[in-house]
Amino acid sequence: MGMNQSIAASTARYAITMQGKIRIISGRWRGRKLTVADAPGLRPTGDRARETLFNWLGPRVIGARCLDLFSGSGALGLEAVSRGAASAVLVERSASVMATLRKQVSDWPDINKVQFVQADVLAWLDSATGSFDLVFIDPPFEQALQQVVLERLLSRGLLAEDGQLYLESPRQQDELDLAALALPIERLRSKNQGQIRMDLLARTAAV
Image 1 (cartoon, helix red, strand yellow):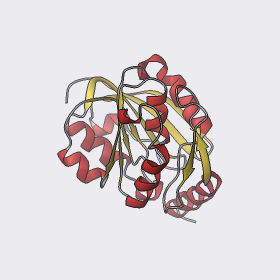
Image 2 (cartoon, rainbow, N blue to C red; image 1 turned 90 degrees about the horizontal axis):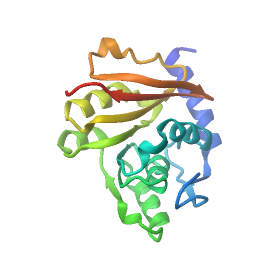
Image 3 (cartoon, helix red, strand yellow; image 1 turned 90 degrees about the vertical axis):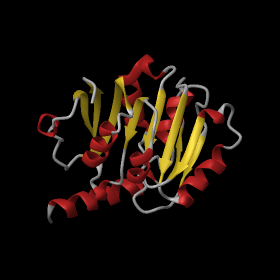
Image 4 (tube, rainbow, N blue to C red; image 1 turned 30 degrees about the horizontal axis):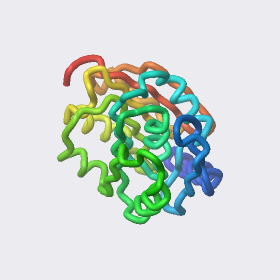
């Protein structure tokens, strides 16, 4: 089995385990559940990985302007707002996935802090404006978009000067060589958990 086939197979196995419901772990919306839509490539970040990520971020989440790309179930952006982020923009290509998410959270308190954008992520990045303190990048693994999204995000100046970003990728995929990419970012934390690799990156200089 080739590398791409191996990644696809393990991604399929992981996706199957993540179908059903996920929950917000902490904060104002703690315990609220989200139904995971049955859609190709949808692979929400599980409880353990989210707990690890938000432990890494700590108080940085409070008051942060967040961007959740390939938001899918909305687990990352919603978890951030639940824990005190000032706002979150959730960008998801699938109209049906986005509609399912919006319907589920329509009556949550302070949901007006969340902006829902149904759009192709790369196209949206080409015209996006603003500055974000925390960015979550978790594309469908089979599309291998981590590098191109990272480059597009930084070239557009969307990451704040002291911003951080979370990158999720398949464990079998080669780790991004940040030095070779010549981008103004550094790796702060990294961990393999189950079938995924978790990376927390930080901006080091102006683009």
